[in-house]
Image 1 (cartoon, rainbow, N blue to C red):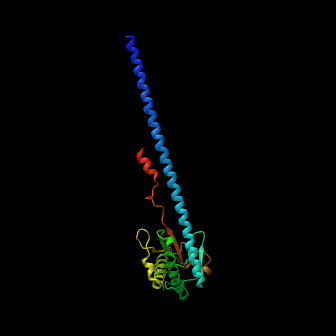
Image 2: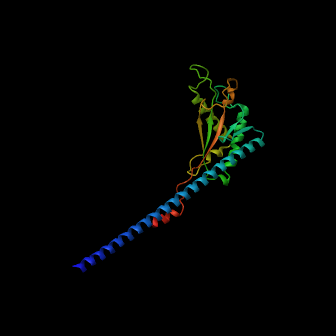
Image 3: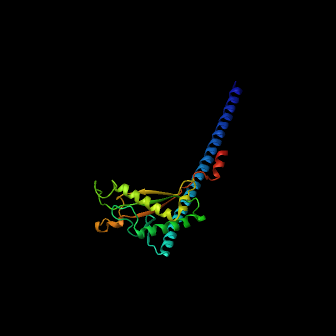
Length: 235
């Protein structure tokens, strides 16, 4: 009976050892999975950060190149380097007007040519998601029954953006053929009304009747995952 009890104690000890080995293997496996997962997220974060940084550099470069080309042709444009927005540097419209003034029309037509020549370059291929043509108005109220045929500054600014786009496209029809990596048309228009004035001085309100060009770059793709993910699947 004593021998049996002794054997039982030995057997129990063996079982305990096996259990602890199994737990150790499990913990080691979980630690490996954790390390691989952490490595994947670090690599993924680094990859996306690099992608965003590269895209920002591309956006700054294309806007600077467009500005330089326009100025070499004798047209004045501004580049807001805080927002990275290209701004046409002259009053384009009369108060409550949507038709481009003569000088504005020539500027817009030249801009269309320059933008097309830049956007078709290989270095910008599949990098640009959208180009916004943004319309803005001054703060003058639109009175019902007045000479202005638009009911609000929102509508007025949107029509200004549309007419600017049409002016650009009339001189460079190939702009309408440009598409992003999703095969969607590159250009779009938007209207901000009086909500984003450049100058709040009433005597200089004509400066607020403007067009801005804003470029949106493609966000990082989640499809290009680091190869480390395959290691995680094998664990």
